[in-house]
Image (cartoon, rainbow, N blue to C red; front, top):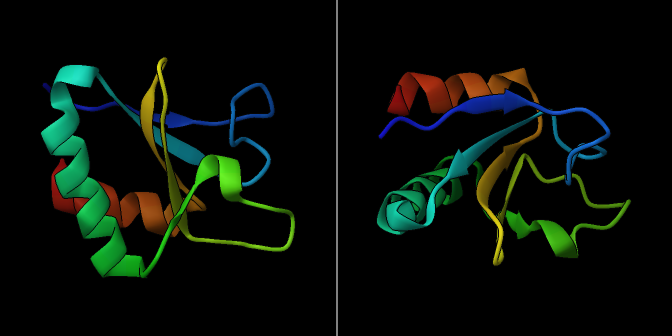
Length: 87
Protein backbone atom coordinates (compact mmCIF):
# COMPACT_ATOMS: atom_id res chain seq x y z
CA UNK A 1 0.00 0.00 0.00
CA UNK A 2 1.37 3.39 -0.99
CA UNK A 3 1.40 6.25 1.50
CA UNK A 4 -0.02 9.62 0.56
CA UNK A 5 1.90 12.85 1.09
CA UNK A 6 -0.47 15.59 2.23
CA UNK A 7 0.26 19.31 2.21
CA UNK A 8 -0.77 20.72 5.57
CA UNK A 9 -2.56 23.90 6.49
CA UNK A 10 -3.63 25.30 9.84
CA UNK A 11 -6.57 22.86 10.10
CA UNK A 12 -4.25 19.88 10.55
CA UNK A 13 -2.49 18.82 13.71
CA UNK A 14 1.09 19.93 13.15
CA UNK A 15 0.14 22.50 10.54
CA UNK A 16 1.75 25.29 12.56
CA UNK A 17 5.16 23.59 12.52
CA UNK A 18 5.23 21.38 9.42
CA UNK A 19 4.37 21.71 5.76
CA UNK A 20 3.71 18.03 4.89
CA UNK A 21 2.68 14.74 6.44
CA UNK A 22 2.51 11.12 5.38
CA UNK A 23 -0.33 8.98 6.73
CA UNK A 24 -0.06 5.28 7.56
CA UNK A 25 -2.77 2.79 8.45
CA UNK A 26 -2.37 0.65 11.55
CA UNK A 27 -1.57 -2.51 9.63
CA UNK A 28 1.47 -0.66 8.20
CA UNK A 29 3.14 -0.25 11.59
CA UNK A 30 6.32 -2.05 10.47
CA UNK A 31 6.55 0.19 7.39
CA UNK A 32 6.08 3.24 9.62
CA UNK A 33 8.86 2.09 11.96
CA UNK A 34 11.26 1.50 9.04
CA UNK A 35 10.55 4.94 7.58
CA UNK A 36 10.79 6.63 10.98
CA UNK A 37 14.18 4.99 11.51
CA UNK A 38 15.28 6.22 8.08
CA UNK A 39 14.21 9.77 9.02
CA UNK A 40 16.24 9.51 12.23
CA UNK A 41 19.32 8.39 10.26
CA UNK A 42 18.81 11.05 7.58
CA UNK A 43 18.01 14.18 9.65
CA UNK A 44 18.93 13.20 13.16
CA UNK A 45 16.59 13.03 16.13
CA UNK A 46 12.98 13.95 15.56
CA UNK A 47 10.29 14.47 18.14
CA UNK A 48 6.78 13.31 18.84
CA UNK A 49 4.38 16.00 17.69
CA UNK A 50 2.88 16.51 21.14
CA UNK A 51 6.30 17.41 22.61
CA UNK A 52 7.22 20.11 20.09
CA UNK A 53 7.26 23.61 21.55
CA UNK A 54 7.50 26.98 19.86
CA UNK A 55 11.30 27.12 20.23
CA UNK A 56 12.16 23.74 18.74
CA UNK A 57 12.28 23.45 14.98
CA UNK A 58 12.90 19.81 14.06
CA UNK A 59 13.06 18.83 10.39
CA UNK A 60 10.65 15.98 11.02
CA UNK A 61 8.36 14.52 13.65
CA UNK A 62 5.81 11.76 14.11
CA UNK A 63 2.52 11.01 15.81
CA UNK A 64 1.09 7.69 16.91
CA UNK A 65 -2.21 7.78 18.73
CA UNK A 66 -5.53 6.00 18.59
CA UNK A 67 -6.59 7.85 15.42
CA UNK A 68 -3.50 8.20 13.26
CA UNK A 69 0.06 7.28 12.48
CA UNK A 70 1.94 10.02 10.64
CA UNK A 71 5.34 11.35 9.75
CA UNK A 72 5.63 15.13 9.50
CA UNK A 73 8.14 17.04 7.36
CA UNK A 74 9.21 20.63 7.91
CA UNK A 75 9.58 21.76 4.31
CA UNK A 76 9.88 20.84 0.63
CA UNK A 77 13.48 19.62 0.99
CA UNK A 78 12.58 16.94 3.55
CA UNK A 79 9.49 15.68 1.74
CA UNK A 80 11.43 15.51 -1.54
CA UNK A 81 14.13 13.35 0.11
CA UNK A 82 11.36 11.12 1.45
CA UNK A 83 9.75 10.81 -2.00
CA UNK A 84 13.07 10.04 -3.67
CA UNK A 85 13.75 7.25 -1.20
CA UNK A 86 10.32 5.69 -0.75
CA UNK A 87 8.20 6.42 -3.83
